[in-house]
Image (cartoon, rainbow, N blue to C red; front, side, top):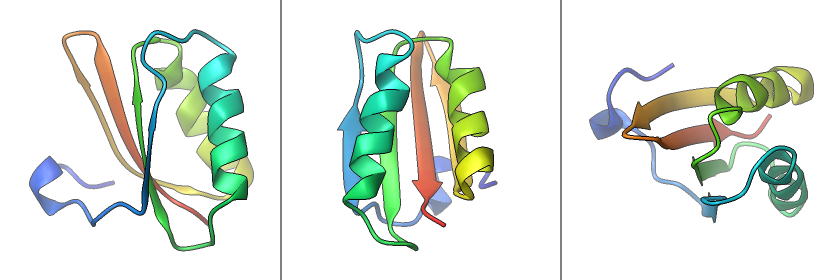
Length: 83
């Protein structure tokens, strides 16, 4: 996992799930990655604290790489490379 936002790869898509709560962020992510190709990078922004548990499990289960995870003042940012 990357330690700093400065060293993140460029993203191919961005998904803003701010204001949505479990299970909606994961459902939207699942739909979004279906339209993407392996190796592409997805940025996800969320406000639901449950995503700190759900998104790493989503990545692990589906074989995606969680490149970056950061929380700042109740907003969560994830960068995922599709497997």
